[in-house]
Image 1 (cartoon, rainbow, N blue to C red):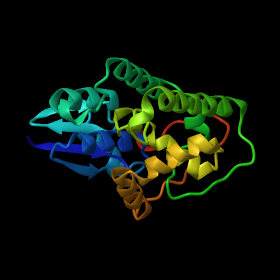
Image 2: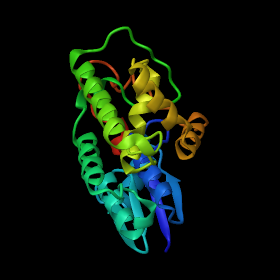
Image 3: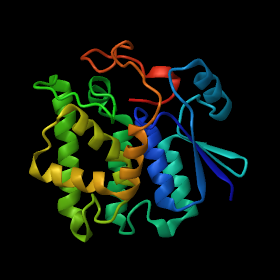
Length: 233
């Protein structure tokens, strides 16, 4: 198997982080190639490698799999022993549901608090819509931990695809100083200590690229598009 995962800037591209964590969890032999966002050459390269001009996009033996959930399902089929999804049926259904919810929801949090791993932008107040998103995420974490988390420190005990989907949110909470409470903070600490997450964060911190989120109007209360056409935010 020859595999390449095309990703955007590690510091900004939350969807790239999800895709990369999923691939690393699967254990397949895969090279990561960064395509810088918000630069002309990056936009051109995105169109070459991805049918949607977005990342992540996984190339395997001539085939292309794009979108994080599709990548998760592909990897689950290829490497079932990696347990992208939990073995228990009830836990597996729940993991897929909350991963799909992450995929389709939380627009206010994404817009107001884009991923910026290197930054520290603590806020005293958040818009109501952002607080609603935060409370829903914390409720998901708490229910997962209560129902399925007895076997370890993560949402379903062992590290899984659901944790990969929520890991970028953990970095957002750190960047913007979100109060996750004691239980939420324990989960965040476990995620940040996970080796693949820690490796991603270290790489993000030394990247040479910088996207001026203020110039693009991202990070304030108003809605704004993702930079560069990839998948940041």
